[in-house]
Length: 213
Image (cartoon, rainbow, N blue to C red):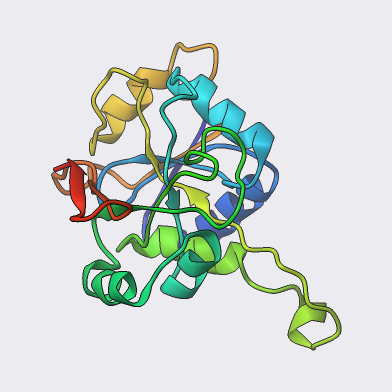
């Protein structure tokens, strides 16, 4: 694991390093608006398999995704008008919602044809990563060719399955330090503000059901 410390002036440089790493299929420990998370390209099958190996998590327990805005969310999930009005009130924020998927993801991301968990985080570095990774290539911006390259990021906590997620960087690093499968990069932003993982709300049922407070 390579560890990079965020110290104000190097923020832009670190974001560039993380973007390149994610595009290469690497796994990054990164601060979020809740706890430290494992961030990877959610459309990359190999990266998703590695996330599950790092967490020692069974594939039957799917992980959610981060998206940059509501428009992007609509590309991956079925969202009606009432749900959209509700999501505009709670996003960006610490609420993961379960919706019906519109696209197929690698195994482990949601449940095919049944559900997908997603949220817009209130976190500068994650939102910056999402914006850069989903920026159209130059030829598309010039109108020469339209390519759909939407890439959400994994939104799972940086911990081994069965162990608690953490806002403290030393606790996060210690969980992976002597493991066979480890994250490729660790972004050390120091200890985050005390927080629990996001609330999980199932919007596929009526009335909506809280799966995790």
